[in-house]
Length: 388
Image (cartoon, rainbow, N blue to C red; front, top):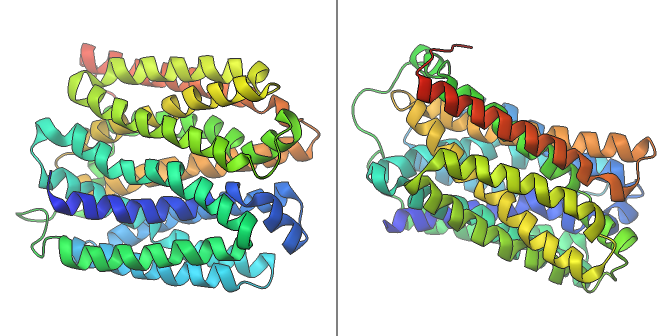
């Protein structure tokens, strides 16, 4: 595997840590800024909206520049944004700093996905994508519990400082490891051609599937720490261990998704989504027991990350003639789902729904996602032309 992909995975780890870190430091952050937990959870929603809108806009605006230069510049902007988050004196300024960080997120993963696809031959793309996305997985494994532990020990601001330092390190590594030449050769597709690539059902139905999965995932994951504290009965010092176990599941899940993509992506995808729905159902009961909560969280994390690699590879293949905008919109689909999930969770909690009922959203959204993926697969097999 090219060293450049490892460099991109490190950068993805830094960005993923920044995105996930809020859920790990939510209670102390809310207390310090004198806002409710649902209000603090809206920082996830705002960040996701920034990614969903800023990613495609920046991708189009920077299309004529070297993707290497774009990726490095985005990481430097990201590192500065984390410093601003750590220095924010109130909720409003923290929200603005998070939006600055979000602006480059979608552009990074759009450009990074195209570069990864160009660096390896098609039969190895599943493994390459799983390694790249593995940076996000590692963020869930180490960044989320690590940020939570730093927040408990040194305060939530220190967690942002640590992530900012990591982002700066990732930018330095990319300077030395990303190829100077452009990842792609030949004429760059026009914006019109990129829009036309989005009409393929393999592309836009994959976006729908991503949105549905993330809706249920984030509605629960954003508030998983309060769930552990208030429903499972854990103490703050043991929560990072549970988050770490969830991260272990996500590592296995992304590996499983990569292997399944190089084998048979659609059967893998549909099976993963159905299993995910099953473990959201069992979570309704498992969260009331410390041991079963830990076991269920492990398997739920496996399903929560195994689905992403097959879908990303499917989008790149569906839009292979003009992949830049389509790849950028992968992050948009993820983050529209993240914003909606965090917002829906905050709305339901503010309306009186208990933490223990949040997995019901995941049951419904995972089943709908399995239906969407299954329909797209059926349309592909029967070669039925569908346009948006």
